[in-house]
Image (cartoon, rainbow, N blue to C red):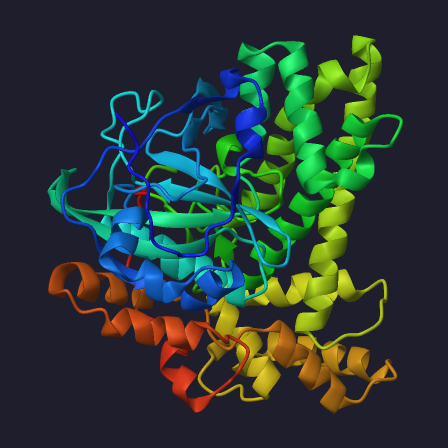
Length: 489
């Protein structure tokens, strides 16, 4: 099929460095056209930062371009190949319903991937139709933009368009395509694919490309592939600590959903904690709790071990030496994660310096939250505002004992109580994308064609640390009803 090129001046500035890698790692192809593309939501601020003209993107031709009917000048679409340990089992995978359009060079000189998600079948689709439904695409838009506002590295959402076509799952659904922006889509699973189904030279070329793109300072190092492992470990330790600190549950931490840039990717069955319980699982397919909230650091380490295994041929010519280097390096993950998490917990409690008892102070509070089924976000919100009414935990004798320890800890630092409160306000979000609020917005959009609920939610989530009166409605804890998420994206 011949690509139809867009002729509008939307500001695209494509380069396609990934397409210079061995073609074992991808398949060049154009997306199949859709019948009637319509823009549902467009991220104006993100568009501006990318150097794009939002007005042009909103045009009829712009909608056709965001649906894949027209290809921007300079783009070179391709589907990426990768593998992945899915719930512990290695599978040969790839972009089954996504296409990398190309790499946009922003006005700031940054290079980011532009990807269609839900754009149709590819050689990696297996039995799938390659399409996506409107609800899951809007869900990714909401969640990824909320994570960005929370200060957590994440892929971004530029736009969601409907296709004018239905897709069929359990029922008939409205088809949609999301335009995703990422530092890159290079995954642990990309390296697993190269290590298992490519040559050593192809693995080396992929590693060198990843270094050049994300860690160029490491290229001159004697063992640059060991540095690659070290740097990826650093970013993942920091990322997962940030997840834990806001109560985010990814839901499907397969190795194909861990990107080496250190961003959060794939918002299918994700959700946020309400009441604090490390065993919390929302994903309907995670029946054994592999990816429960409390297991995420362990799974992060497990995934990084799979990455290290893929790198072994490059770490050292001697296999035993390569394994030893990998094992020693992987030990850094636990130390780094704990350091990031503890620093974050200190900030959430208004603590500026370090003392040996800080870890037990934080963990003891979390244990009290668990025992008294306290809401995670609102407990820290209440401590920040010094308004403890309405949360049963704060009326217990156990809490009063803990509070005395906490106040004594704050008294032992030079900073004032006002300084501590300011630190807490910048570290404890007043609101998160509450699961019931996200579902409320999706229901209104998908069922009633009403996007006002979603836009109000997005506006509130854009500054989660504002502590405004208008945000208070989004801090209300839902009734205790079972909640499940699904791998719909």
